[in-house]
Image 1 (spheres, one colour):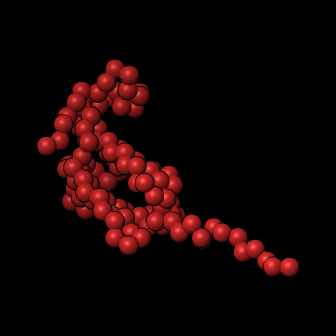
Image 2 (cartoon, helix red, strand yellow):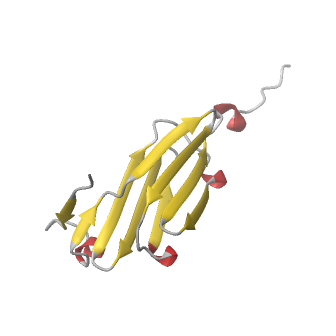
Length: 112
């Protein structure tokens, strides 16, 4: 069950315009080097979804009426932020991430 809370007094200005803040229902799993995330956002318009990703963190903010959906995930692995794909259809957000191979940025050391 999802817990809905009143927005805290020390929330950011952006968050204060919403009456309620909640974590949406979601599933996340990894398979090989792929990380899949599915988030249920009922009644949310596509234009009201904001996602950000750092090397090992995924952040989601989505809103509808006076509700703010917030999801912050620590992925415990580095991802390739240039290969993120997202689709939104009928209230279901699907996000595909790919783990970053540390050798992709490695330098070839020449032998002299």
